[in-house]
Length: 151
Image 1 (cartoon, helix red, strand yellow):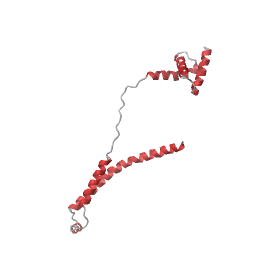
Image 2: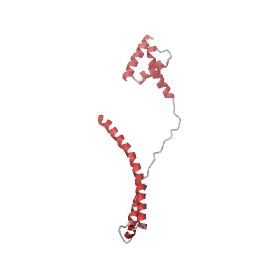
Image 3: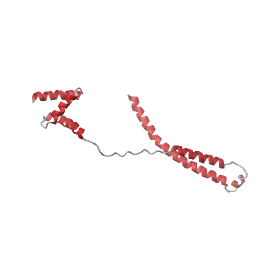
Image 4: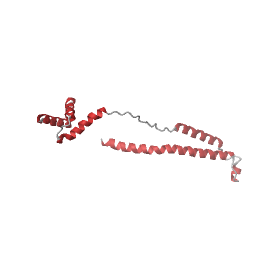
């Protein structure tokens, strides 16, 4: 057994240097699959035993994949453009109704302008909401570039 033990210790040294062949690694696995392993080599028995046990394990559970949330910025920008066009169409500066505004009365045009303005502010809020997420991407890129430049 001493000769076999010496050979095993040589193979372990080669294994730790990454110089063993597949056949030599198989011989080590066979040796450590035996329950009678010297105390100073028990650490390797666990390591080689784990790789043999890991080959038999399987994973059968289904992993749910979360779909990323898509924000449809195209439709929001089209809606904002339509609202802006409607607001510009209904808004006319000056004109014969200017005297009514001075007396505290609002015209239909001014009401349409206020509604368009309110709608645009709402759309702008939604657009800015999506823009906030970009801060995280910028921070990630900054950190990634820092590590890339180190290499």
